[in-house]
Length: 208
Image (cartoon, rainbow, N blue to C red):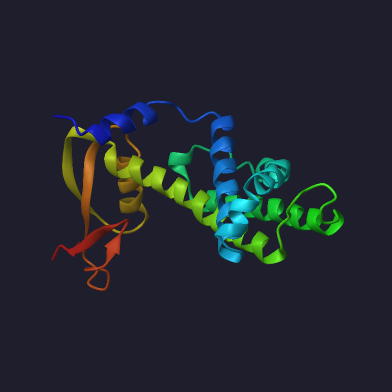
């Protein structure tokens, strides 16, 4: 019987990719949630409750600044399940552009002139840190699900001989198949210096 989690992920991963607006929406929600966390941590729950909607209004108005960063670094044009380190770096850079814009706004706009509440410098920094962590986590989790749940019912367990570019390339090719025909359980090597270590999350075995 098919695992329910596999069936759910099959529905998602059967699509070519999420539309760009869906990625922007997800990222925006996580950014605003990060802003609320920063207010709670830097102030307290009473301040968060008292200025809940004022805080929401401010960060909604700041979203265009983050969209500029996303546009510059094209964080919404990739396929989340194929996210790489380069994609994660672009996300951090896009968020940095947005938070830098927020910092400039707080310098130029007097307190109470437009917004009921505006963030302090430390709150902007904390928002940035939490936003980076959450957007990275979203992409890493989706990639993990794609790599580990999208296994065919009749997938064969295999060991790959070689731990250099050739062996790693074969392993990546197998993991990128959907549904997977093969499950990489480990690598085999003649190099005793590498045997016993882990590569791509699986153990390297000495084949001698």
